[in-house]
Length: 94
Image 1 (cartoon, rainbow, N blue to C red):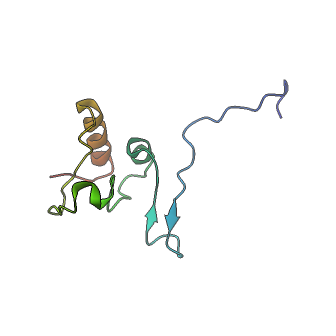
Image 2 (cartoon, helix red, strand yellow):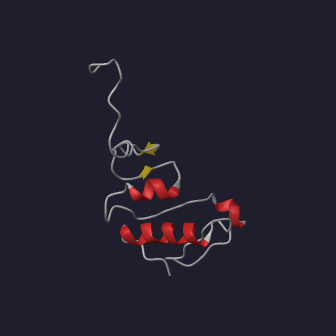
Image 3 (cartoon, rainbow, N blue to C red):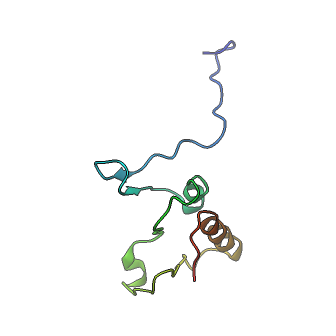
């Protein structure tokens, strides 16, 4: 411990650790968390799919590729933040 007995506070975001991943550690990784926090910590050009709700939320209404469905309870500001983070990691919703 540092002088004074208090631990030094962490700086920056905590490391992004997969909730689950394939045994090879690179084919597929699942991250669990608040979508805006997780997306903000993802490396650029590293995402192939973002799922922010179980498929039964929309009663299995399947949409065309590139579609993005956000929680209707999000405010317009929150929606724009999520969409901005998707664009930052090269996901371009239609």
